[in-house]
Length: 120
Image 1 (tube, rainbow, N blue to C red):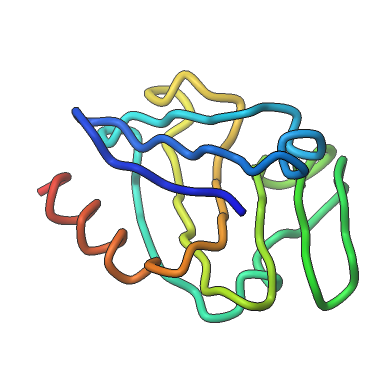
Image 2: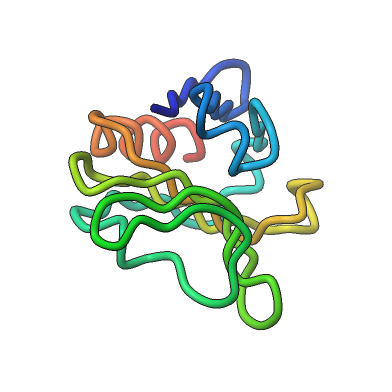
C-alpha cells in the first residue's frame, strides 16, 4: 500500500513493494506549488482512464501508468478498500511526466485539507 507524506513543500508518495514493480518506481515526489487541484474520491478505481501500462484486477485494484496514448498521463495506485487522493498537476512546474496522480490512502480527506492549507 502506498503512503503519502507532505514535508518541506513536497508531496512524497512511497509505493509498497509490489506496487513499485507496476508503477515503475519506488517513490514519486511532487512540489506543492505544482498542485493545481487536490480532491478526495470515494471511488478511486473510476478515475484512471485510457491506455495503460500496469496492473488491473477488475473491480479490485489498478497500479501503473494510464493515459499513454491520449489524455492526461496518470500515475495510479488505487484499490477498492480505501478512498483516493487525486492530484491534478501543472506538469511544467512539477518537473514530472504526469498530469495526475491518484493513490488510495486511508486519510485522503485529511491530506486534501493539508495540501489546500499549505498551498494557500
